[in-house]
Amino acid sequence: MSTTPPSRITHIINLPTQLDQPVSVVAAPGVSDTHFRNAIESSLFKQWLKNIQTETGLLANGAMSLKQVLIQGVDMFGERLGFLKFNADIIDKETGQKVPGIVFARGPAVAVLILLDSEGETYAVLTEQVRVPVGRLILELPAGMLDDDQGDFAGTAVREVEEETGIHLNAHDMVDLTAFLDASTGGRVFPSPVSFHRLL
Image (cartoon, rainbow, N blue to C red; front, top):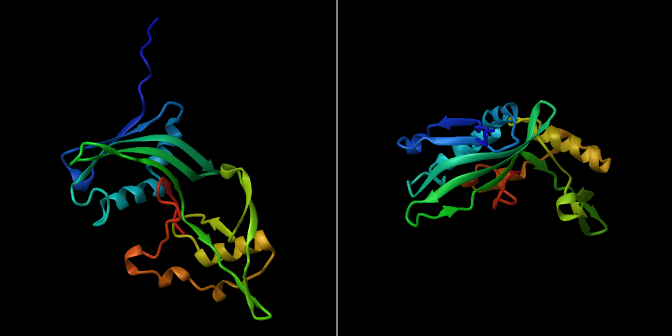
C-alpha cells in the first residue's frame, strides 16, 4: 500500500515586482478545488496582491520577496466569497527571516457614526452585537459588509442602521467621513491590520 500523500492544488503566478521568482499559490489539505479557485479569482485576493506591489507595498523596494501563499480556508456566503484565510510566505531579504504572514481577508464594510443631540449632550448610537471570537456581547457602531467591491456604501449604511437599530436614514443625508482622511490612505481605514484585511 502506498503512503504517498495526495498532491496539492497549486497555481503559479508571476508578479511584475519579482519577475525572476514565480509565486506558488497552494491549497492546504481540506480546501476543495472549487474553493481554491474561488479564492484565487476573488477580488479580495487580487486586491491583496495589488496592495503588496504598490509603491508603498511590501514588495515595492525589493527588500522583501513573496515565496508562496497557502490558502487555508474559504467561507462562502451563497455564491459570494465571505472570508478568506491564507498564509503568505514573505521573506525579509536583508535578514533572511520570514515576516508574519497570516491573513484573514474579508471584503469592504461600512460603519455608521450617528450622533444625537439632547439637552446639551451628544450621544452616539451603538448596537449590541454577539461576537463569538471574544466570547461576549459588544457595543459597537452599526456596521455591515458590502455585497461587492463596488458596493453602495450609503445604501449599505442605511440598510444596516435600519436592521440593527430600527432607525430609518436617507442615503442622501449620509456624510462620507473617509473623505476627510489624508489622501495617502486611499480613503480607507484598516481597523486591525495585524492579520485582518478588513477596511472601512
